[in-house]
Image 1: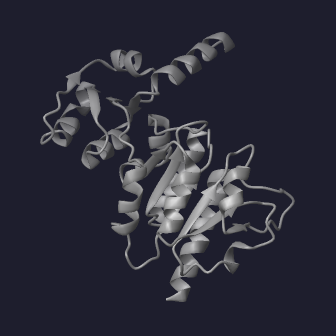
Image 2: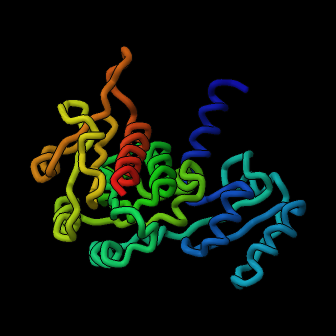
Length: 263
């Protein structure tokens, strides 16, 4: 395939996959969770029985199409015979954050843990962070509505389905959301490679909000100014930094490990 044709394929994938979730696992997981509204469900004949079973109690219609037609619709040849066109993701709002903090439905044996994403723009990073948040039983993830990637099919796939299980709160003002979290008794921690405080020195037995900054700029000055502590992951090798998703996963693990040790 020529470079020109590859470029057209990439453009097609980028434009279509903003609304189409593809793949048998991803679509089945989303349908089972029932949290993200579906506008259209399409399947090839070999996946029809599995999809009909998945939507049996939902009342959704299923369109049976050819593999070529499904590729045309969703813009990807890697659909595994199943694709769903998604409606807007149902984010929770600032008014819901206090309720989530008060009535945490996750692991109640652990202290509350909020993750605040500050201007993350890479969908794979955001999805991977959501996956780590689910693994570490985070109470909720808070994102802003500007300079921040939202929940897309790409993010859903990168999260391995975690978008269906982790409460995601989208707000206009992250500083205001941090204020709500602090009022609920959480210490506010910001990930920063410039910090002198190693992550394991934090009292992880306390409820916490962890702020993870953008891939290029880190945590904004406004948020750094209102956090209680900046924390770092000591780097022992020659590379001076980690990407946002890896850093968030390591910090979340350390906070949960510290909480378990304190019990």
